[in-house]
Length: 396
Image 1 (cartoon, helix red, strand yellow):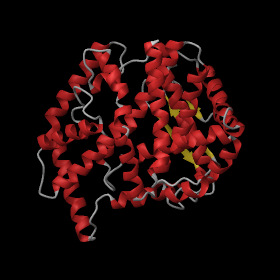
Image 2 (cartoon, rainbow, N blue to C red):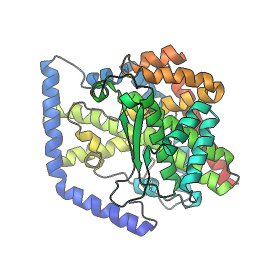
Image 3 (cartoon, rainbow, N blue to C red):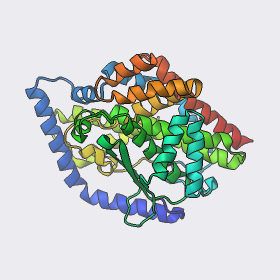
């Protein structure tokens, strides 16, 4: 799906879609069983809303969650300017084209240069963060060798009692692999603040997804913003902005579509099992709503492709990613302004992971009211600013 040749990318996409179409009834049966069990459990426990357990686990109120979604919806016109601009420069714009376009103008970066740039980016915020990143590399916490048996993406395993982590990724010299490295170092930074937590079972039971990605996303945003700022090559700057905007829209639109889909699916399932065709129709409808019907073709069988849908315990895995992304954008603006003062608060904020609701921690340490659309709007304004800059560079 990430091959340099667009024809091979399309062939992979079509073959996968064809295979999933043949297996859709099996996955549909699994989905219906999830719905039956969860709806029955809610009925026995006299719970009206299937979302309630997920909200409680993530330490977020329903008011704050829907304030976030409503603020995104109010900005649709400005957010979809990027998609409209893409459509004007292509015969058509599909989900596949949007998600698999290659960023060839970004160039390659050696591992030593990647470490240097991650250090430089974090140093602009706080020396302690920067030297921690360097320590992670020089002390051998990272296995970045590009072995073929490694899966794509990255992974960070915490060892809380030792105050250390171990990171694995397949470094290939692309900006994407540098971003993954920065992301995983962000996880390690978070875990370092949890050194006094009793065990990994504590993490499994009390580590809210709404905050789990916060530090990692912050580190990668710091790195990408740094590259955009320091590069003098307009093509590379435009390519990096394109990458950052597409990542933003993935959180605000693709993840939004998954949330809408689960809402619709559990509501419809109250009347009985749905066929695989009906489930697929709900999936496409949800994507259209999330993208403002801006694409000509959407992702087929996303409800089969996303493994998170098959987590057995709690539904609605999705919104914490959007929450964590916009929270990180907002916190980054504070970090750029306050520097070391921010880091001192941020470390204490991370150290209380799972001890209090995330919403309460954000208000206590940063005086941010997540039920107020003002904070979400400030974060979204940064994405809109990136879109405006990208269009300006493209028209220059």
